[in-house]
Structures are given as structure tokens and as C-alpha cells.
Image: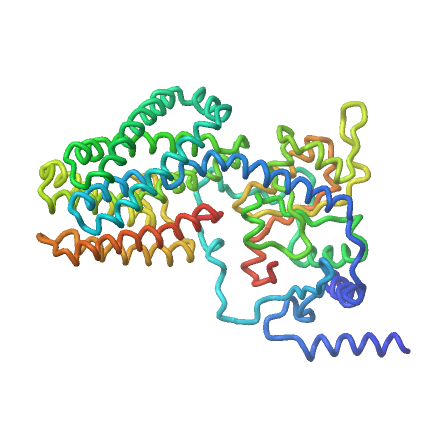
Length: 304
Length: 202
């Protein structure tokens, strides 16, 4: 009987036209949405300054090696200078967010020293980058850049981590819901950094520079890269990652995984020809490009 | 006589034009208008269609994704048929009823039930800076420090479904702010059930 009444209601009601919307409510909600968007954009500004900076530290180090190898030097001089200018610009912009940084420093006091170290190390590195662009092969400049790029990477990784953590919601349920996503956000960009670092170390091995250290780093980073790429897809308790079922992310991860495997095959060769080195650099750019799509999708997704 | 003929035509048209996957034996779809556009709410007619991957998981971590109770206090819990009936009722006069998706914006943007509005549960938290503004927009009035919800439309609240606490959280916050339980309907099945049944998602 009830079902018959419901059905009859549907049949009759379906011929009624649409009602006037509750305009005041809808307009009010639109205003709130606009306000929330603007606030998010403002909050993201400081976050945007740390994006890609970690990868830049490795691109700079890699290009310094290519310049010293005199491989397309004029091209890589432009590249290294551009990356250095971008890095410097973003670092300065980040430091302008004094109010936000002070808030983060209160929560994570260790950030104070990290930022000081970062500033000091970068200032010196920048001088050496400008010198290497002027003089091609200068061992002193190359040594400084190679010995300090890890410091820059570690310091910036911490800055990235602390800034990401402070974007966590104040609502307990929402913060809990987003915990896995927060961990994914922290890790999803790492493959870009690792691939560039691996290629840089392979080039150092190729020119017999810091061979033992470069070899150790190379082996560890290749192992870490394979573990990370698997963890992003399938999860890994040791990395606190739960993996993803998101079809778009999985599809995009498969693309970057394919490029990584091509890179891995090349870097593991005992000897590299000039053409293979150029191919490796090309694949480095390709990996960064395709993996940036993954990062973007992850940040925009709701469920992983 | 004219009404009988009209009614028979209606029944016949529903019978003739219904697909294989109906809502009920007698009902294939409903048509609603939103932002001046017609939307047909029906079930996906592809019998091989499978659920969206966002809703394919069986075992999300609890907490925070714990199974939600059937009832929240004395709030009425409704199913799909009741929801559809209410959606049609709202078409006549949506000042009396609102369908509210209380998921966070990211979830809402992935797809929601046609005619719903988005009010993230985080904004229905007393600690939210938007809390008072939203209650006022809904029609609640502050009287001597307490909220009066008399003029607020009946709110049908949903989120992701039986494993998601966003709707429960929103409902509990509204009740603790003074909203009477009969002003709220809880569509517990949420987007999980909506997707499971292949319903139109906007």
C-alpha cells in the first residue's frame, strides 16, 4: 500500500515544474565558498614556494656535473642559472611570509636552525654556481656544489615537511580522515628528487669523481626509488603508505614507472656512451614531467 | 474521465519507456530541474556496470572510517525511495526542505546527488568561523544566546555512507546547537548506496 502511494506520488509530482531557489541561502553559500577559496589560495602561497625546490637542488647538482663534462655546456649553463634563479626567488618569497613562518617555528622550533642553515648554504652555493657558469670546469666550484646539495635537500625536505604538517585541519575528524593523504602528499614528490639524484650520482661515477661515496649513494637511492614506487601503488607499512585504488593515479603511476624502468636499465650499465648520457638526461626531464601529473592528481584527489 | 485517461497515459508511458534497470517495478526515473536544467535521475542501464573505484573498498581504517549507527537519536533514517520522494517534493517548494551533502568540498566535487547543496560538516562545527553565518543563512535565529531553528527547512543530510562519520558529525552538531531532531532526515546510505545502485551523479 505504502509503495503504491509513493509511486503515485512520483507520477503526479514529476509533472510539476522547478521551484524558485532559496536565493539568499545559495548566494550566502557562494560568498562563503569564495572566502574559503581565497583563504586557501593565501595559505597555499607559502606552500607553493617549497614545491619543486627539492628537485631543483638535484637538478643544479646534476647540471654542474654536465657543465664540468663539457657536455652541451652552453645549454646546461642556462639551465643551471635558471634553476638557481628560481630556487633563489622561491626561497626569498618563502621568507617573506614572516607571520606564517613564525607560526610554524613556534610549532616546530627546529625549523629556525634549518632555515638559517638553508639560507647560509644556499648563499654560498649560488656564488659557486655563478662561478661555474663563468669558468666551465672549476673543481673547487664543483666540489662545493656537490658536497652541499645534500644539505640543501635535507634542509628543504624538513621545511617542506613542517609546512605541510601545519596545513592539517583543526577539525579532529577531518584531520584523521586526511592522515593517510597527508603522508602521501609528503612522499609523492620524492621520486622526482630521487631520479635526478640517481642520475647525478651516475654521472659522478662516470667521470670518476667521489667514486666510493657516489657508488654508495647510487645503490641506496636506486633501492629506495624502487621501494617508494612500489609503496605509492601497493602501500608499505615501513614507509607509512597505504597505496592507492584510485584508477587515475594508478594509470599515471604506471606511466612514470615505465620511464623509471627505462632510466634504471640505463644507469645500471657499466659504461655509458655520450648518446646514452644525453638519453638519460632526456629521460630525466620526461620522468619529472610525467610524475608531476601524478603529484597534481594526488593533491587534487580525495581518496587514495 | 479526463483524469482517468491522463493517469492511464502516464502509467503506460512509464511502462513503455522504462529500461531493464528500473528504480521500482513501476518507476524508471524521475526528472528534476536544477539551475534551469533538467536532470533525469535514473539507474545506470548497463547491467555490467561496476561501482566507482572511490567506493569499491570494503575495509577502510576505523577510526576514522567506522560503521555508523542506523539511528542518531530520534532522527529519522531514510532510504533511497524516501529520498527520491523528498527530492520531488523539494521541486515544488525547496524553502521547506534542503538536501545537504555535508562532505568536504573535495568529495562533493567528485560527484554528488542532483539538487543537493554542499555544507561541509567542518563548517557545522561550533568551532568553525563559518558556523554562525551558516546557521543564519539556513534561517536559524539567535535568541538570548540560543539558536532557534523554527524557520530552518527540513534538512536531509548525507555524506559518503555507512562507513563515513561526516553526516553523523554534522547531525550531532546541529542537534547539540538546538536543532530539533524532527528537522533532520538522515540518508545513511549516502554516496556509497547512491553509487551502488547506479544512480545519476551530478
